Amino acid sequence: PSVFAEVTANTTVGSAWETLSFDLTAFGGFSTANTYDRVIVFPNFGTGGADNFYYFDNIAIAGVTTAPAIPVDFESGIIDYGIFSFGASDFGPIPADIITNPDQSGINMSPKVLEVVKSSGAQVWAGAGFALAGPINFSSSTTMSVKVWTPSSGTPILLKIEDSTSPPDANGNPSVFAEVTASTTVGSAWETLNFDLTNFGAFNPANTYDRVIVFPNFGTGGSGNSYYFDDIQLTN
Image 1 (spheres, rainbow, N blue to C red):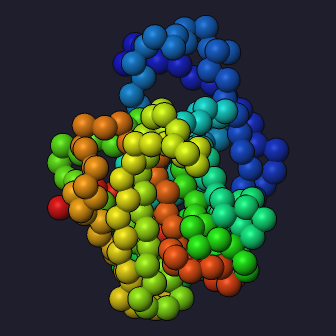
Image 2: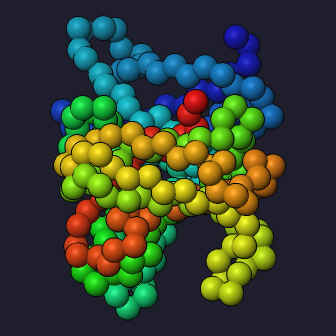
């Protein structure tokens, strides 16, 4: 192709991983208006082959982040998931972050998951969530599924979606929302829970729901247990 851009960078270590940056503006013919749709790497460029191996990973646009969109699997290294939490004993945030999957087994072998720790003394309504890049499109389904890991069976999980731009209610939360509860049927193992949003009377698929929140062991105060979530998506 006659439209391209290329930049060279040299490694500074051997037999170890490092991150190289390539400033495309250093190439005179580069234009952000072009439709670049192919990436090629040339290892040890300019030198003939000698049966050496070279490894590449995590090719990304540095410094560019965006919010997630459904489906959410917590695997991207460049998406800003912006995890927030609330409901600690002092009404501050509870521990919540994306971590390495502590139980890669069964239906969930993925490397990364969302951990929510319902710390000791946390409020019965403690939870965590994240904003989406845009509203959820319910044209294909009005049921959401989530892979969940809880320490015991019979644990109620409340899934809530909100329109973050709607007027606040008396508690300061968005007044346009939908929430549905489902309970786990196994303990210390992954399972998929389905949340049929039509079970919530005020649910309207035309609303601009752009925030997702999970409430682990909803209705019970915290005792320091960890709960894990993954693969939040629409399902039939």
